[in-house]
Length: 131
Image (cartoon, rainbow, N blue to C red):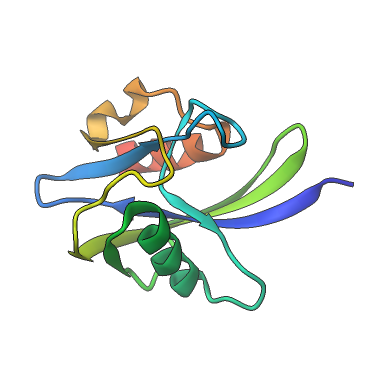
């Protein structure tokens, strides 16, 4: 039986209407694909708390999150299942830097589909483009 991992992802939009995208490093599982930054939810950790913690760890900046969940779905990979929960957020302190990813970029919604996304993130990309 495959392990299910609960993961939160931040949809961070800047003042120019661009969304932060992160390229998974070669040392990560599912390398060299784009994702929305975030990470695993620890046991008994609230989703919003997990997302704020993960962005602080990965991007060295502070965010505040929307209270609503933007997108929640489950995707099955070869070796595990991911329950990916996307939450919109805004940076309230600092500037994102890539501490764990190979690259980070800001893209307009209409250009999001130009990247090669991790399969679990594709439905979120489509929802953002169609929003």
